[in-house]
Image 1 (tube, rainbow, N blue to C red):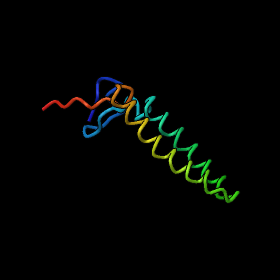
Image 2 (cartoon, rainbow, N blue to C red):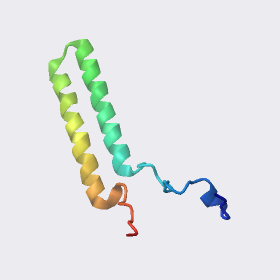
Image 3 (spheres, rainbow, N blue to C red):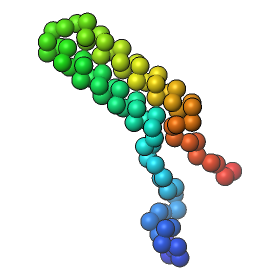
Length: 84
């Protein structure tokens, strides 16, 4: 396969170019909240503080919901265009 356009030479016929790899405000916010949840939960286990452990568990769900809401607001990855 010979490509005349340098941008096309980096991709084979079966690959589509990836613009953002899912790096969106919605994804980063969800990851940040869920990471904080795991830190809170881990520290709570070390300190044997079960109240804070359950706060950490709750934050996991909060992060997932916040990420989904932000995605529905248009801050997530856009659906790929299908040429069929």
